[in-house]
Image (cartoon, rainbow, N blue to C red; front, top):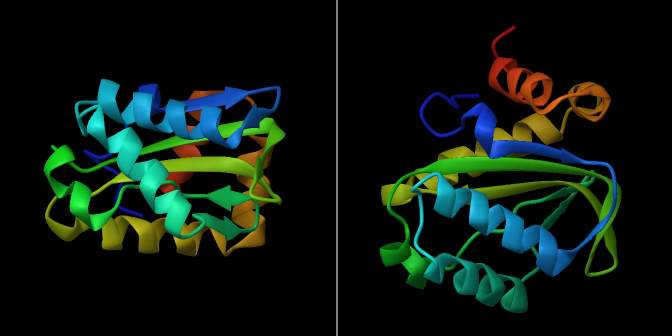
Length: 147
């Protein structure tokens, strides 16, 4: 998956405990804001998207992202990744991985596709679950699809 320029080690975190869906979405938005990828308005757009359709994708993955109307809140493309070892109740589903995503000029579709492919491979997901540090988790995501 092409992550160069859209993800850095600082955009990856691991938490031992659980989080609520709103806490996880807030963290995803905050990481995107810190990366200079979105404005504060993007968080509300993520909430709007979640109200219309769940961003839980299965296999322990949720990908909160903004609505099409939030294009102006997206400054650059970026991906954030947070693993919650205690889980996140995502509308009745159990998420372990929360991937915040922002795509400039339609890049989000390519980014979403790459994430979906990575998380459709149970072996790769097991490796992501076994990572012990954010740096290790980052390296696994960056190397996915290149071997």
